Length: 192
Image 1 (cartoon, rainbow, N blue to C red):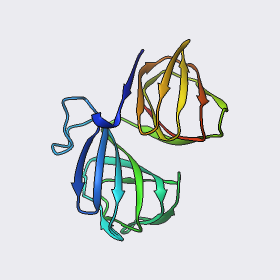
Image 2: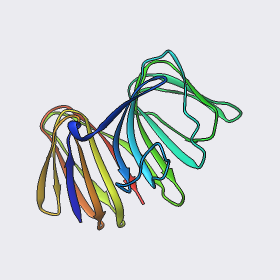
Image 3: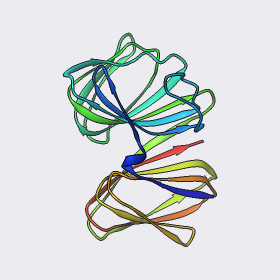
Image 4: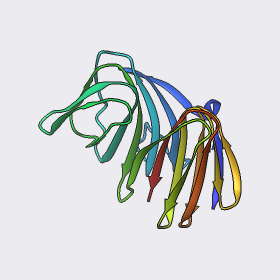
């Protein structure tokens, strides 16, 4: 098992037609978004245009969770959905997709047999939660959207400040204790 802290200065930021995007993590490390040669990619996009069209990404499955703001996401010939904080949608990258409304989102993109899930965890000040992982997980990501927490993973502690991410690779089943220092919101991503 490996545990790594990634800080905001390590994230890769760029512009897109609807606003700005920040690549939080890509695997394998040699992959690039431009070549679409990744197994999975985590990113956050700030949608600044009232109406924006998503880039077509054939062969890529997507999960999108709202971190702030709200939007209505429309997939032509598929479905439409209104999303507010911590609500999410799953769709295929080759669907013609537009969003209506300004928001900041968290994106999981996967290819091939790779699959993943997103969950939001909220904490009151000076509170704790136990996360039980029933099976081996290839990757766990904890992104601190708001506040600060301490993770206790296999009897070692890791500080997770706001806007940072902890990456856990090859996690055997077990428990992770999460202790909040302040009112905190985390996004948890599991990849298999």
